[in-house]
Image (cartoon, rainbow, N blue to C red; front, side, top):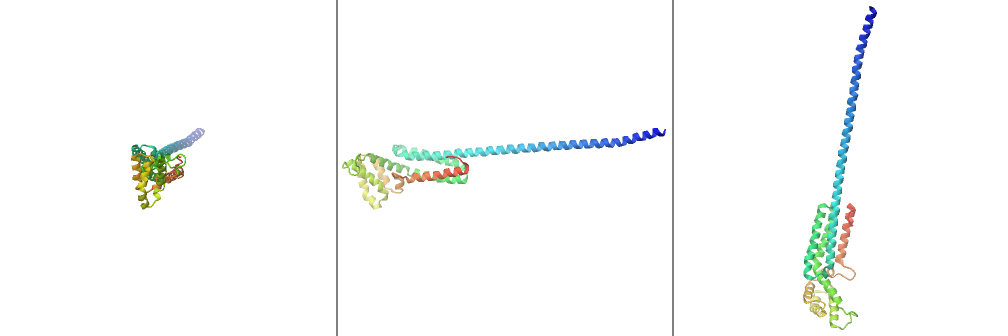
Length: 265
């Protein structure tokens, strides 16, 4: 009887001990599961954040690339418009007089429009150099028509020279063409009084050269009455100051564009 009571008591004690152990094991199992779930959630959150950051970085890189592409296009368009204007100005003496103004206006307007694109997209350094190019283009436009009159006349007079010895030829038309050419070449260096004294002689030589028609002679005389910027308009055999300045500011613009974005050539 005592033995049975002892066994019963032992079983009860074992049961009492087993229950808390089971509860404790269950507690730690749940806690471990919670920690694992939390760690998984954190890992997922970190991955999500990384994905968002990568997407934002990719989007920003795409915007920056789009901006650079737009700048590249704007810079190239501006340079192209300026170059076309200069080519037209150099060819303008060969264009019939009535068509010169319209052609010049078209190309000068294209420069102004293209410069607006640089103003919107370009950083200050590039915009500053673009302004220099635009100003030089405006200077070229300002002198282009008078320049075309003079350079057209110079070419026509040279073609009317004596084919053998222009300076000592006795043919009146050849001699007049040479004298008119020589007068125009040094016209801007004459004193005002000298120009007034020579003006009638210049008109006579232009007419007697038979190189120009009456309208062309009238245009040359009109330009000759204003000698401001004469050397820029008439140019020279080896150097052309007006175009040299354009090439200088154009080169500065390209240098700045390369330095900031590696863009146009």
